[in-house]
Length: 219
DNA sequence: CATAGGATTTGCT
DNA sequence: GCAAATCCTATGC
Image (cartoon, rainbow, N blue to C red):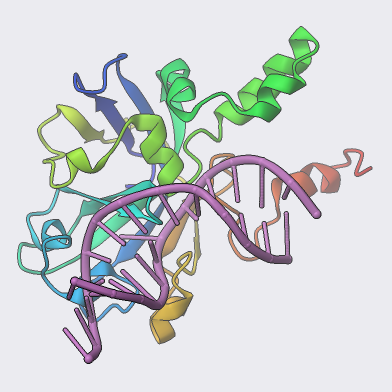
């Protein structure tokens, strides 16, 4: 799904359509995967994971954040892909409003130039994380189980055929240290070099260091 | 029925 | 670097 467009246009969360390109994902398998919610088996919560592919599995973490998966295996077999980051494409103003104007971005803009630069940089990170992605696109558990193939409310669009295949980087999944041997599986995938990644991949040079390495002033 | 802890983000030190 | 915010799910008695 890397490179695909995720589009949200829901009359229940008005303001117009918003959309972004998926740049980071994680794969979660069935009950054998100790990092997957499916390890609990088929329950009320995990039911969408065991359902038909192409549907959403939206859950709440830490009591306050929504995260969204795309179910990917056949009915009866749990399997899903967590969407961890999107790069905003349209509806950016609405995404900004949903995320709330950050104090840092608001306080920084003394000049036109610096404010627009800061704004562009922070806009790129509006969907840089599984919970940020959901907040920016207005995805809540109301859409748990939603059929993503209907082309309404919330859906996916394939990239244009002329679009070059993204260079993909791989690493272990985030926040699953409790999962024993499953914690180290390299099932996190990202578009190399995207400014919207939730965090760097192992061995990847952080963005701040990249500019220094290219000859920028490292302070 | 009670309780532990989480596929995160943010702000402060 | 660290802890708080906050609620639902799963699990155990």
